[in-house]
Structures are given as C-alpha cells and as structure tokens.
Image 1 (cartoon, protein in one colour):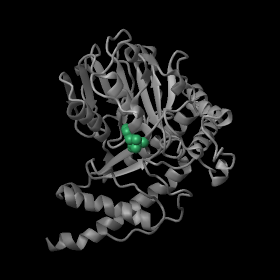
Image 2 (image 1 turned 180 degrees about the vertical axis):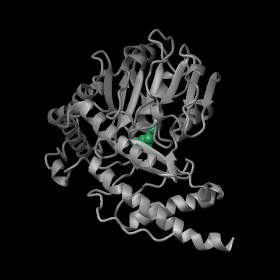
Image 3 (image 1 turned 180 degrees about the horizontal axis):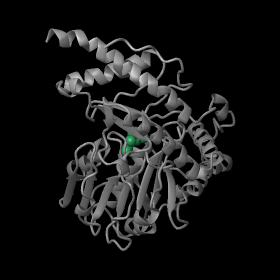
Amino acid sequence: MAIAARPDLRPVNPNFSSGPCAKRPGWSLDALAGALLGRSHRAAAPKARLLEVITRSRAILGMPADWRLGIVPASDTGAMEMALWSLLGARGVDVAVFESFGAGWATDIVKQLKLPDVRVFEAPYGRLGDPDAVDFNRDVVFTWNGTTSGVRVPNADGIPADRAGLVICDATSAAFAMDLAWQKLDVVTWSWQKALGGEAAHGMLALSPRAVARLESFVPPWPLPKIFRLTSKGKLNEGIFKGETINTPSMLCVEDALDSLRWAESVGGLRGLIARSEANLATIAAWVEGRDWIDFLAEQPDTRSCTSVCLKLTAPWVTALPPDAQWAVARRIAALLDVEGVAYDIAAHRDSPPGLRIWTGATIETSNVVALLPWLDWAYATAAAERTPARAAE
Ligand SMILES: Cc1ncc(COP(=O)(O)O)c(C=O)c1O
C-alpha cells in the first residue's frame, strides 16, 4: 500500500480525550479570573458560587424540583461510591455491566460491600445486554453511557415508574449530552470534566425523593467515612444540597464549572448540547459507513454513544492478528496522530478491545471532527503500509 498524502487541514483543537475532555470553544485561563481564591468556601460569596453551580446545573438538565443536587468530593467516583455505600443493603441488587466502569461498581458491591444478594448481568463490549433480565423491585445499578465501550442506553422505557427498588445511574459521560429520564431514576451522578470540559475535581450527586426516603429510613450496617455521610441523626444533611460541601472544594474548579455551565446556556442549554454532540456522532457515522477497515464497537446503531465514540479495526489483516498485535496497530494510529498534533489520547481505553476512542461531546466542534477524519484515513494507511513488509515475509 502506498503511503497516503498528509491531509491539508488540521483540527483547530486536537483534544479528543475522553476525560478530562476538551474545554469549551474559546476557553482560556481568563475564564477563571473572577475565582474567589484564598477565601473560605463557607463565607457568603463563595458559598453562593457553589450554590450557583447547583442551580444552573439543575436548570440546564431539567431536573425535577423535588430532587436534591449536591457537590461532593472525588468526582464521579466519589458521587457513585457515596450512593452505593449509603443506599445499598436494604434489598437485593441487580447490576447491569457492559463495560469497565459498570464492572467497577459491580466489584465494589460484591467484593467490598460484600452484599449477600447481588446479581450481575454482564454483556460483552459492544452490547448492552438484556434489559428485561433486570428486576426493578430490587435496587438497580447501571451506567447510562459506557465511556469505555461507546455503548449507551438508548432510553429508559424498560424502567417501570412504580418500581420498588432504587435505580442508581452513573451518568458521567451522559449528563449534558443525552436526555436523562429523571422519573425513571433515583440517583444520578456525574463529574465536571466530561461533557462540559470542566476541571476534574468534584462530583455531582442527584437524589430523587425516594432515594432521600431510603437514606432517612435505612442505616447501613457498615461504618461510613465522613466523606460519604449524607445524613446526620437519621435526617438528610440538607446543607450539602445548598452548597455546604462536606469538605473543602476548589474555588478555582468551581469557577471553571460555572464558566462551562454559562457556555452550555449560551449554546441553547441541554437541547443545544445534545444537538452538538449528535452532529459529531453523525459525522463520524457517515465516514465509518464509507470505510471497510473500521466500524463502531457498539453493535446496535441506537446504542452508539454520542460522546465516547469507540471504534474497532475490522480490516481482515488486523483482525487476523493476536490481540496484542491489534493493540499495536491501534496505538500506532493514535501515536501517529499525536505526533502530528492532530489528535491526542484517542487509543481505546485499556480495558476495552483494541481500537480507537474519540470524544465527541458538546465541547467538540464538528468542524474539528470533520478535519480529523481524513487524518484517520492517513494514519491507518500509514500503519497498514508499515505492516506490509512484515506480511510479505510471513
Ligand atoms: C462512566 C464513567 N464512570 C465513572 C468514571 C470515573 O469518573 P471520575 O474519574 O471523574 O471519578 C468515568 C470516567 O471516565 C466514566 O466514564
């Protein structure tokens, strides 16, 4: 195969990492100039900024008025761990696993919490699994968008409104990019650095009234570290949901989160964010359609993520290779683009099958995706040509 010519156009922003994700278009450090640094986060003005993150997030996401939303430590992991350790144990648990992060929650529930009645439904990478297998009279834990497989839940139609269990949803790469069916969920978590490209720091924990009722009626038998404690003397710690964080937050990250939320409002709120992300997915889908060497890892088109697009290499010369050698091809493509300054961090997640992963959330301009695609063709052709002498010698 002849070496392909380098494309002329380069993405203006080569940041296609799936977390931390690209900053919003036009972002610079100036966006943080007004940060209330060196102040107590419990003083009136800083606390008002923390509350503003909560109120703007609620409004953009269309969160029901009777839900609570709080800023918690340790990003999405912190928010999910708080939920799992505070809420589970009252009834049996079903965990739907279809990629690495869901698998991590299952491990915590089975091996750390050691709950006696847990069913784990695991689907291979690329598939969602059978939603009918899950029993919503038990507590259910799932990830809305599998960042490491590029598979998302297309809707929440299968979740009954009158369920007896709680539905705990890790929505960290779905929030601000997909419609979350609040009425079908009880706990929703996300982080700041994903769809809005904020600084990684704190997690967001959203609780339905039913989740709050569980917190106030069920005391887990295990000890809870201070950092996980959502109740005091059997009552919800309401302060957490008004900006009174459990421990000290970064006011620099708070300022950045506010900047990202204001930008989200400026592009049309949730509808605008979803449209931007879906346009990026559609751009890649049209390109994949015309290629015989690459395809979506997600098998069903309606489960393709619009934020973490995971692609597998399907050329027969690649699929005939052992997994390590397939990884080498995928990493070579990613490395070529990295060296060219065209795309950073687009090799698939280490837990996934070999391939590429391109973040296409709302902060990614479609023009940059358009500019990236010819470079993918170029990098693949280059990797394939490098392989040719080895193949000839086989
Ligand atoms: C689906 C999902 N859950 C959890 C996490 C962990 O998030 P964090 O590192 O922000 O805690 C990630 C990060 O990529 C994720 O994609």
